[in-house]
Image 1 (cartoon, rainbow, N blue to C red):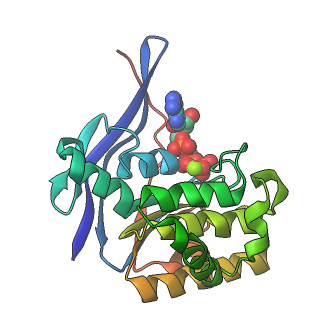
Image 2 (image 1 turned 90 degrees about the vertical axis):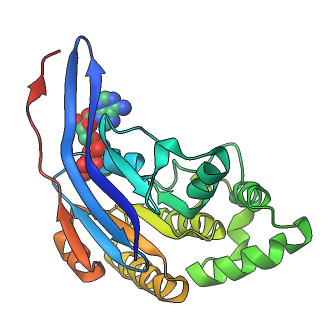
Image 3 (image 1 turned 45 degrees about the vertical axis):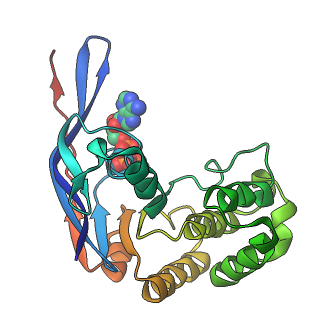
Length: 228
Ligand SMILES: Nc1ncnc2c1ncn2[C@@H]1O[C@H](COP(=O)(O)OP(=O)(O)OP(=O)(O)O)[C@@H](O)[C@H]1O
Ligand SMILES: [Mg+2]
């Protein structure tokens, strides 16, 4: 079943009187419980596309449909459901945590956001941390006090707390050494089977994408600059 659909989306940024085209006419279908791999060379717009698919930026043209509805015409209630159900794991996992909060404080903020009662927080965190293979000790640490692999797991754990239907994973293993990479890929496969989550798996590593994905979409580099 189709859950997220990008319909000929394009994105450009206006800079100093001209438009920088990042990508144009890009379409992708994301089906429940399946993985779409998104590949392309560095700078072709993969992370920008991730933000557009997640509704964090508007496309310059085209539409993003979630469960058949244009995400930029959703009601307030539908929008907050969309923001909960579609999670992004950003390319820089350490930077995606607030540096002034411990990992525990960041997790608690998300649990509160999804209305988990305070007395259930510890159980819920223990459950999710067990899933991603993290020790509870790291809850008292700040983002710069954990390793890249731990930060990546913590980012996935934080995304899972939201019980998403779609996870957009932007280069989830690129910053990790090969053994940790394998663990994270294994974890993602397991989580997908357990929870029937759809993934948009972004990477420049075609071997990893082929291993993970049901379908693969390629983004091409656009070098042209459009005059105003
Ligand atoms: N907010 C912005 N304003 C202007 N230009 C931007 C903005 N965000 C991204 N770009 C430009 O869009 C292009 C694509 O960037 P993006 O980060 O999406 O590429 P990417 O495919 O994710 O690259 P990488 O593989 O290195 O992560 C780049 O040329 C970048 O400079
Ligand atoms: Mg990127």
